[in-house]
Structure formats: C-alpha cells, structure tokens
Image 1: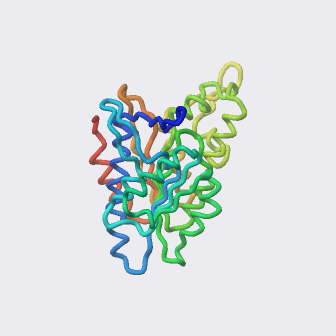
Image 2: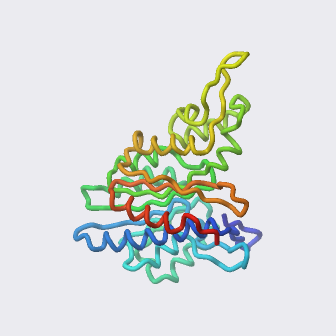
Image 3: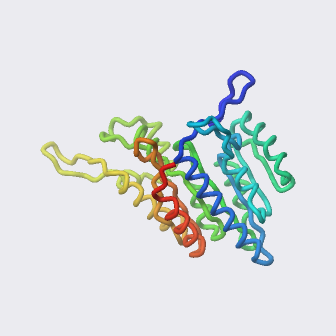
Length: 283
C-alpha cells in the first residue's frame, strides 16, 4: 500500500510472491485481451478494484515495479476500456499521473471511491451479456475489505472473470482463531461480509465432542480454501473455479491464495497453464 508521508508518496515494498502474482495476472491479461479482440462484436473491460498508486518498490533492490493496472495498460492488443478504483486519494493522484504516460488514458476511467459500492452500483451493471460486454476484474484487497455481493454479482453475470486475493493470513490473524468465542464482533462481521453469510464457521471449524460438551476445533487453511472455492461455484455461480495458488513469503508461510473464477473453460485452461508455470517459482 502506498502511503503519504508529508507531501511524499511512500510505496509499498513487495516481495517475490507479489511479483509472481503480478506476472500471473499480466500474462493472463495478455491472453484474455488477444482472444477477446479477435471476437467480433465483443467489447472487453479490465477492472482493478484496489488499484493503489500503480507502482510498488521491490524489497531487495528498491526498484520501482509496475502494478497490475499499469501492466494491463501495456498489454497489446489493449482492452477496450479500463476501470481503476481506489479509496485513497494520494494513490489515485499518482495513478492518474502514471496512466497519462501510457498513451491510453482515453480508454481509462479512474474512480476515487469505495470499490464495493461503485462496483455494485456502476461498474458491474455496465458489463452485460446483452451489451456484448466481457470483463476481467482484479480483486486484490489487503485484508477482509471485500463485500461478498461483489463476487456474487460478478459470478451471476455470466460474462465476468475474476482474480481474487483470498487473505488467509488476515483471516487467521483477526477472525479464525482457535477459540472462536474470543473473536470480537467486528472481526466476525468482517468475515461474514467477505464470506457472504455465516457458513464460514462450518468451513473453518468442526465440532468435537469433549468432556465438557461440544467444542469447535479449527480446521487448516486447505479446508477453509476448499469451502470458499465451493461457495464461489455454488453460491456465486461461477462455472469454473480453479484450485487457488498459495502465495508464500520468504519463510514459506502462505500469505494469501490467488483464486481465479470465470464462466468459461477456456479461461480456466489458460490459468491452469500459467499457475503451473509459476507454481514452484521462488524469485
């Protein structure tokens, strides 16, 4: 996350796992735009709901690294339309400057807004089958900041594909504790809003019978991820939900899982190839 210190914009310092994610999304954007450009009569849009400043700083070298919005803007052939959203005004200001340098600013709409609200009210309703629109939406929240209804609306549209950062580390730190009764109401509410209902409890815990009655036992990350993957298929309505790719830090701990969900087999096949290519990458 870029931060403003005085009048100076401070960039998020990213590790190799973030660069792996950026490369995966960039490669898919390239394939997606090439295929859709060749489909006569169809228009395709790239949406980045947590765009940030458009650039990051590499931890080991302090070099600037383009983020997913700028990577998408440099894809050839380009998307017909780009919608970039962020709630932070400082990030939006910097992003606007970077977009102006790409030569494709006329295709770009930058929204300084809460992505949950603007996606549901304006952006997703504009991507419709009847209007021959198709969309690729990148949802890369830093934590439990996404409303499930965004995923449900995208899935039920039948024309939107999604990359999702599933923030398992934030979940474990703030909501999925070994003793669920100790979790505060705000954290529980955030988890429910992200998951869409309270079925996250059965996805993350199983009930064991003990000496003092029934006791919830926390399940591992794989169980939580499998439950959410099933929910993307059954509740959100995505026809194809690829097994997510774990994104690990330097210590090997899973920071988040990268999900892909979409309405067609072609996209899932392309993502499968890209995930396989990057699965064992460490730098």
